[in-house]
Image 1 (tube, rainbow, N blue to C red):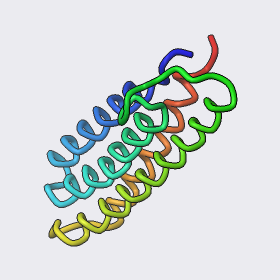
Image 2: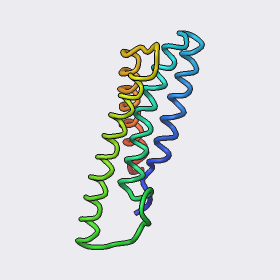
Image 3: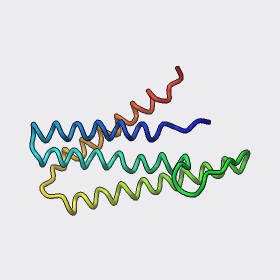
Length: 130
């Protein structure tokens, strides 16, 4: 199996987030831009961690294991990755709300939500059989 396109998806998301934040800085001001950038990064970074960890592109050395051991290892890998993603997301929200002032919460959550939707679209487009 070839590697999943997790890094490519995250780089596309990061590019879109950075471009959107730059455009918002020019048109809406610093508070809106920082809030949007924060929301986007809260989506991109934990998802990148999840993808790299779940598919064992990050962490202990990759080994080819087949059969029942492979399925057990895959499930365990996904559980660890999802737990890490959840913790990173919670810590990210807590850190942002504790440290960034002024912050527009609505823009933060909208940016986070749009980044999640972008991820879904990219996953479908990049993994579709051609």
